[in-house]
Length: 165
Image 1 (cartoon, rainbow, N blue to C red):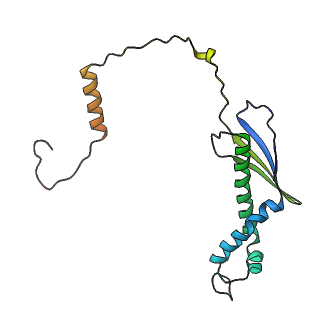
Image 2 (cartoon, one colour; image 1 turned 90 degrees about the horizontal axis):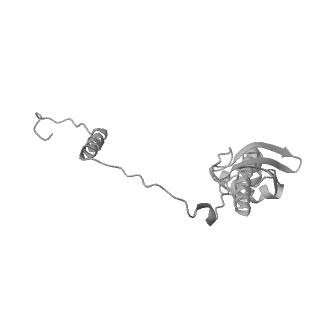
Image 3 (cartoon, helix red, strand yellow; image 1 turned 135 degrees about the vertical axis):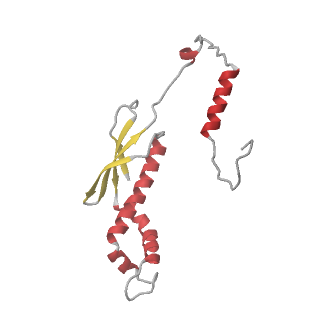
């Protein structure tokens, strides 16, 4: 797997990355995927889970390739995030996948948290005003009543209403 970060500005929060996935990147997942499909596939003439691997590969070639691509992409994304210390805000977006003669070219978009650097001089010595809030018993009672109304439960009973219900 090869990749190139297309976003040159390190302060940019949206990073665009182009990944080239070679056949060897996908091939390493094929055996496990074929095994999983083989276990579930019902193919006429064979008991479930007993069809030969080459028939599974022929019949489910598209699904196997897609699953290999997905697994290779997940691995590539994890490697890119780890190597570049990206702190992701959301999952990466895959706006474009291009099948090459020999593999795939995938464009990824990562949204990262901005890098914030504070030095002591930036915040030491700042003066803050303390805001004093006066809370009256009426304020407390009003909030308690609002909470009671918010969480009230009505239950049907088979008797007449009584005090304290």
